[in-house]
Image (cartoon, rainbow, N blue to C red; front, side):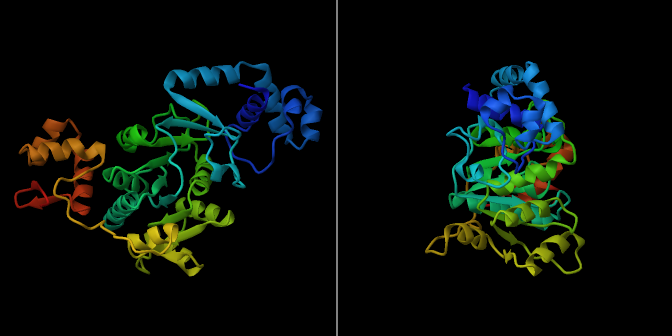
Length: 357
């Protein structure tokens, strides 16, 4: 690692992985400047003190060695592998930790929303992720349950490219509710963070994570969000950087739709079907939208494949599926509901499941 890259990583570690609009000092000041020189160069006093501690420790070496052993890459803002659209973003982080096949190139669309979303909106998010993937768009989201997970699962079901941005170190098993889905994302896409190894998922980190989601997305779509939903911070970050925000309208008396309806009131574009999102990214053109076409041999997210394989083999009840797949009943029930909502499965009398023809 050359001195310029080393200086960037040291400053990023001194900031505890948080993005900042304050440019780092010159390389020589970062590597050998006194505390006074660091603050004179514009660094906040607490950040400068932390940088001095990083310089005096083995922090950089330990971080790089740990990441290499875990198959995690640290990509700095000056690297060619750093996403160009994020490099010039006002909330640019100085480093990304990346696990998986890599960050898909643009065009990308961010799909976010409530953890406590309604079943119809979860189904729509999954349909939207699938449609975007079929149109060649990479899907960017968080790893939270609800809308985020549904959008990623939908993209994976169409063999699409996904980027999941998390608010903790990549060695931290969080969120546990979507851990299996995260392993599927890693296989063909990337799980990304700005935080070093071991960083816990503290509440204040999620707005910072949301700014990265916005920075990686040409268009941000909020599917369902209450007035206090964290998804709105992603929308605000996109607007702040001059990006495009779209929202799915909801019933006026639905608290879960209050945030998205307010976005629409304030000028966000409405999303009534996947076509609206795809055309916002790619432009209006002569294009076939086949997100609702029946699938004879369903392609599903890898985490759902054991369920479909078991049903094809003739295992058709909930208890039997739990025995064959080894998936806990609670998790299995949730995933079957999602497969029903997106049209992959049909529930027949007697709670028997069949693939939709």
